[in-house]
Figure 1: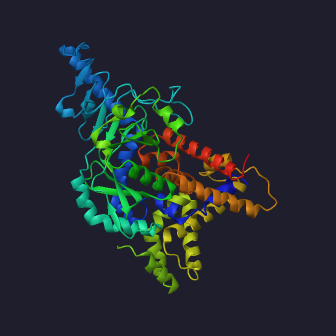
Figure 2: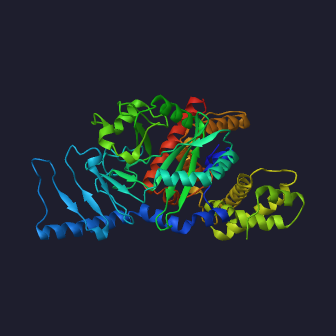
Figure 3: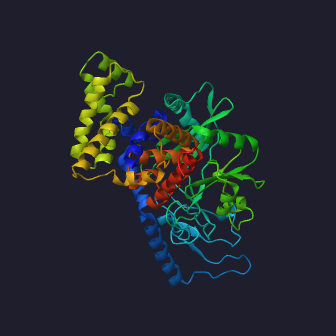
Length: 312
Length: 189
């Protein structure tokens, strides 16, 4: 067998995986998603330009603040070291907060239209995060930046009311059995870092996950997302299938009533419970997960952001 | 023009209505072109491949009656494109969009020799199916986009709003995991 033969054999994977990974290339899907704008935006985000633009803006504003003599040095009482605020016109606000820095007080909100990033996220040159199988470094600046146009649970409820039938039809076509489908009334975002080069702790509020159950069983996680420049239109992308979903559902059921926190570090995903319990839905071993949070006694506090929580 | 349901297209093929071909092209033209182009690299070759695929669909329905056309048509296009790729490769012509993908797949070669290659391949595929079931959907999509759709890392990164580096790392991890999976299944050393 060689690479060619393996590629040939992989042609026989189940239809459901092919459909699951299918991009919107049929004519109706294309017109529904307006991919040109979507692709442009995604390419733009992935290109690193937003980071560069934000950095230039921040530098410019920093110089402005210095010139005005308003840059504050570290306050021994509060531990606040530097505070820089952009003008409202630019819709950028980045604050370095106190050094223990966790929790909702450390949350910073960025306005629409600007992709925010702090420069101390995971880097490829960092020995801890470099090379294959890298573990992104937790940003030193623990400020959590909220970006994107928030999808509220109320908006989601309205959306599901009209779209649930089509979502279910799509899932059924892909082999998911649904007899009593219902979706969670609240959703959650992710606190993430390391996914983009140089990304700090960020919550993309325009991506929000909702849990789709069939009776008691979790069968799909439906991501609702909104693309900037599309007049607020919401799209959906359901994930489903495999042992992964089963394990995910079981873990959520075991932690019923707890305010769970959803974190994404690079391409790895974690759910943290306030009692210190945690899991990686993909089945990562505990030792490996610990490497992600090395030196952090209570990651839940560090990453806490209400928008990224869900209470099953 | 309103798209035709898959069931209607299949029915038109059964009735030998040539409108079926235009309906397929209308609905799945881009889908097929993207697969063929990923594999062949050239738009001209891809177009030829896609036209052949439409004809193959026409010739195989009936007797077949696929419930969803995308995987059926996608598979035919993929196989045709791969055959063209092999032919071009033998003739040493064309841009080989697939070369990198195949190089990556060499990493997961089962090293066990078997007199019965059919059995080995069957075991290999069973393991791959189980492996895919075990992946989180986001990762599985990335794997399938790369090794079924032959998408470039750049395109996958753009579609996922991620950097090319993080997609390459994710793919590397998955190949490594697949190799371990095959090892457990006794297919590799």
